[in-house]
Length: 115
Image 1 (cartoon, rainbow, N blue to C red):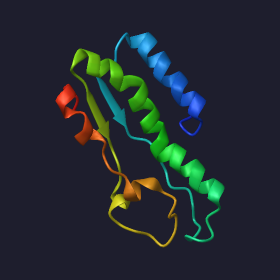
Image 2: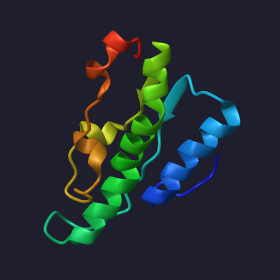
Image 3: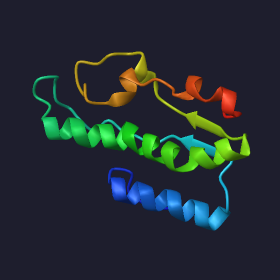
Image 4: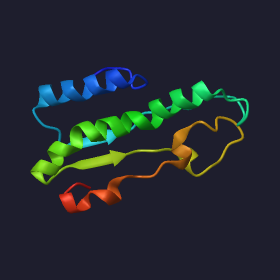
C-alpha cells in the first residue's frame, strides 16, 4: 500500500486497504520516519513539531489502533516498531524528531498473544 504517512486520513486509508487486500494482518512493522529539521530547540516552529510527530510517531499509533484489534481477536499477531540510534543520541538540532524519546507499546498487549 502506498500513501503519505504525514496525513492522518491517508494512514487510515492505508490500513483499510491493507486489510481489504490481505483479509487479515498478522505482522505490522512500523519503520518510517525522518528528521528534516535543522533548527535548534527554540527555533523549531511549533507547526514543525506537529508535522514531525505525525510522520514519525502518530502514523504508527494509527496503524496499531486499526490493525491490532483483529490480532487480539485471533489471539495472535506481532507489532514491531523500529526506531533509530537517534533515540539514544541527543542532538543540538532537530529536537522535534520523536524517536529520540519513543517507547514501545508492546508491554501492554503480550497477554493478548501479541508481541
